[in-house]
Image (tube, rainbow, N blue to C red; front, side, top):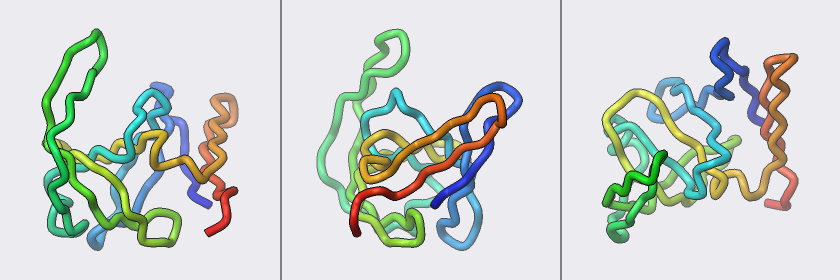
Length: 120
């Protein structure tokens, strides 16, 4: 299980250990992909270029990004995931990454729980 908090401004955040440190990760149920990672994590996740993808962001803004297969530690297991890289210092976790999990965000209690429900 992965646990986290809802921030004062309403963002569901978990901390993920990657590359020797804890990274804040925003849970984004509006992002259908797997991961958006900071450039600083490239060497820690063994990226392998797959293709260019067209991403449609808020307000319909379109961005062409390079997509990579990465080896990403998630819930105590190494997971093959698809990721893009951006400047910044936080991780974005999309619904593709959570397909084997039950997500519970309790805005009143300010808790976040990702509980694996699919068999390994």
